[in-house]
Length: 229
Image 1 (cartoon, rainbow, N blue to C red):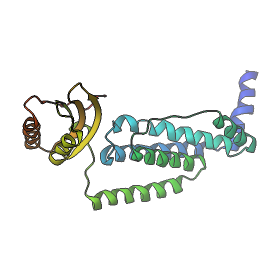
Image 2 (image 1 turned 45 degrees about the horizontal axis):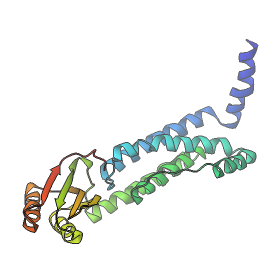
Image 3 (image 1 turned 60 degrees about the vertical axis):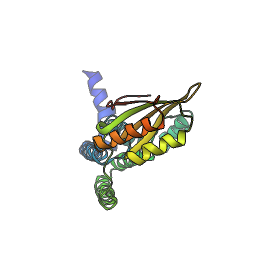
Image 4 (image 1 turned 90 degrees about the horizontal axis):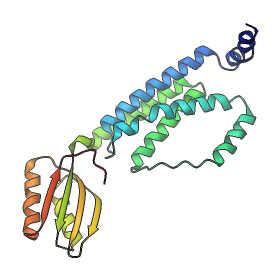
């Protein structure tokens, strides 16, 4: 029984004195709610061609981890210096394929910082303004979000060595084209693209164009959003 009393006196009361429990829970709740909204916005309106749903799943642990670190170090200069020293020997590497992903990570960290600094109102106001401006920019530009489910894998095997000619044919007939792999053959090329087509007519025009280059050309179109080359 004495052990539980010591734990209560040493840790629980110390925690309550440094960080009021109601403020702590409120900051976590606000942060989690804002991150959930940010995740939905990114999945719905983001333009990154990677798996946005999978990438956005990192937002919540990143924000809560940032909140926890700030709440720990904000009351102690020694802990702050220790954190700087610890981070200086840790190397973080992440495969960021699109600058948009990095932008949303910074927004996530900002929300976590605001929550850890006990500034929930600032987080709410800033989040509302940022999302509002991003949404207004989407409306003004008129660009639709890239849906991973809409992407196609186009594989071309050709005896033509002119890559620019083939890529120009794809960009003229399709709405989105990204080269994923290119292999040189003894004669010709093996090319793999991730593309997006609005209708079957675009694919038909692509097929006719590829065939017109050379009868030996082969074209494969696969609807497989999760493919990784």
